[in-house]
Image 1 (spheres, one colour):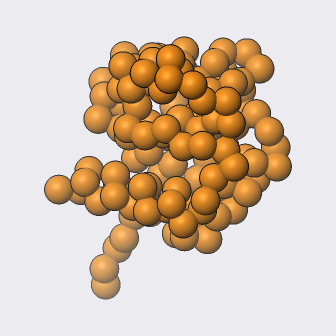
Image 2 (cartoon, one colour; image 1 turned 90 degrees about the vertical axis):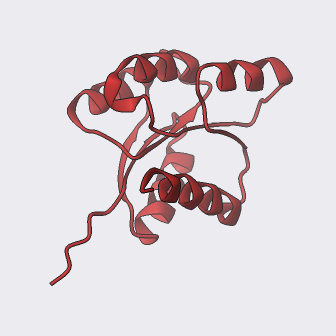
Length: 129
């Protein structure tokens, strides 16, 4: 009997419709998904669980995604964890800041689910090597 462990993904997105959609899509693809609508709630989940990948909205109601990313990257458990930023309001300064903080990818809203999955699978696969 082979036991497989589902990769765990944390999604931090303040818009409930977008959060629900991403979580539903990821769950249907076989991931174990946790969701939060604020940066503080995302950090609380990260204190309790380790994640294989994190998807962060840039604009959150309390802390922005950059603050959450900086916190995650200071925790040794998340140093190698891919972090994807997602936003509908990208500019070069925001993209540069995301990459400087250690983001693995920057996704535009609205997003193409196929592209999002391709990028997620690439990063999850790379972690298993």
